[in-house]
Length: 212
Image 1 (cartoon, rainbow, N blue to C red):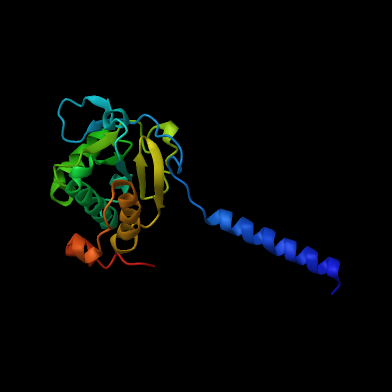
Image 2: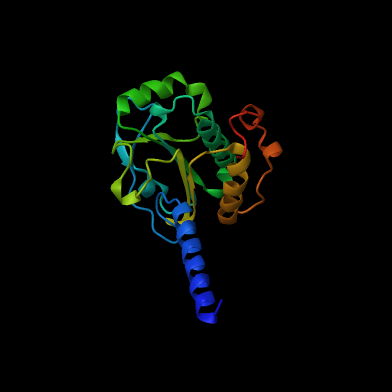
């Protein structure tokens, strides 16, 4: 094989490899370094259904927003429920850092979503965490660029600028909680807890919630 042919084959291989890598990338929501867009929401258990801007209310404080995509179509999605529970519970325990946290449910039917969440209230995050719904459908606010084909999107920010983004097709407490919390403590300080320290055996030991 001559040199020219070797170079051609090498370039073709690199191009295919790069293309394959791009196909594996999944994006959802604003990326690292970008500013958080406005996020109009309503509280799940607020009878007044008053709409407010969660980002504006956070006022640039460190934040973690946990988007749960189309839970009504996956009512038995315990890994998503479990991961949201673990992350929000840890965030509530770090209130000395002024960290704000919200679990955002994306749905095409706000009324049905509220009814479902009321039924499963015991499996949801504690009262300290705002449980909110975007009234703008399954994709949420257009400016956020959320991927409706995912199960969860987690966005960490400081001064309304994204510091970490996790687009999750198969959420897992054991696989995802440690790496998400590692990025969170980079913003609020401290050391990321181990799964044992989080002390959520119900979710951690679920057979559906294992690394693939």
